[in-house]
Length: 300
Image (tube, rainbow, N blue to C red; front, top):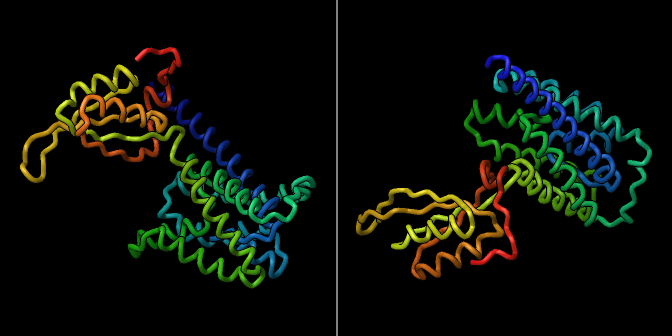
């Protein structure tokens, strides 16, 4: 049993290292082939490396390491052993990626025909997907994430607030070498970046959760399991006004099944109360394995 756990742990670590490397290569390619080539800035420590490149011509591959060394030293006791190792590796992987792509000829010849809108979207996609893969497998690229984590633990300042403040200062400083037009497309890239990071990091299969209150919950539960092949769960609920006991039905479905699920519920109880919530990740039977197979010939 111990041997199996060790083998699984080794495999999980190897998988994380590979995916962090892949994410760093993806992120680095976007920075070199899209951001730098089209004069788009970036937030955080990466944005500072682009500032140093614009001001003094210093290669971002080197400043990525130099700027992260003091931050990693400051944050080593907050990261934990595994977090520290993956942060160091993620930083080195990004630095190596930037060094490689700047020396690959075809990465310098991608021509977007000066279309800054496409450049902004692509910068967000490459950066967001690359960073999302790094985060999803337990790594970081160091930088402002480490500083934000320290301030959250020591001063109680939310990470999101620290990251936003750092990004604002870096982007304002970037106006020293960018005009307003390029800055607006940088903001577009940042927006796309955040959405792609969320989509990549949240998991392999997003879903919708349905909370249903109805006098026909038993029939609705049976219909959802029969028609959509989705499991259901009952919770004990209590009304806030009359304090009457009322079971609450919970069911997780694919986004494409929402309309069908609502139709089933309305057919059984047109007065049913339905609350639909976002489920960022659904893991298990019916979602990540043994998904129900739909057939256009199925009779309802």
